[in-house]
View 1 (cartoon, rainbow, N blue to C red):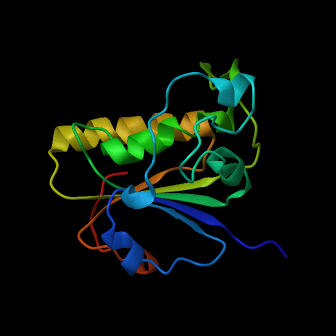
View 2 (cartoon, rainbow, N blue to C red; view 1 turned 180 degrees about the horizontal axis):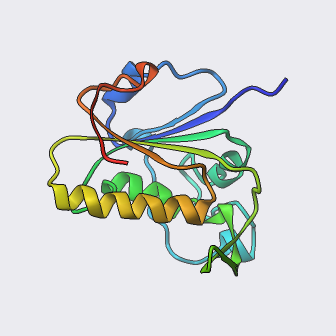
Amino acid sequence: QNKIMKIYICDNKEAEEKFKIKKEDILIVPDNNIKNCIGCFSCWTKHPMECCIKGDNINKLPEKIIKADEIIIITKIKNGCYSSFVKKVLERIIGIVKPYFTIRDKEIHHKLIKKEKLKLNVFVYGESTALEEKIFQSLCKRNQKNLNTEDIKIRKITAFNYENGGDIIDNIS
């Protein structure tokens, strides 16, 4: 029997204390000393699914995501995008798709490594305008298509309480 593994990518250290992270789960928060992607594409060309940047704990994250059942992102919306920390982590996991293209749903997308659909849940907090939320929703839908995840769920929360589904004040998905 396989254990369900979740990967939490959170831009707020407070979440570590609020979530009940299981031993097999992974939590990535700002104090993990995450380095920026340098755009070298060696995660595609030289060492598939492994980032060449060493010295932080996510250079093998693409390999772990392929084995995961769910990605949970907790972020503030910044100008219709993820927070800079979450975006930095997402840039480092490009190795979870192949560098080649295919047509899916009449659109060009990267070829997939993992054929099974991954769950992707996004929780947003803090203040954001209706326009920022609309842009963010569009971004998340594009991520959902590119990463071949199940229908994405985006929830606006007032507190870090994932076990109860979040304190939902507005479902923007």
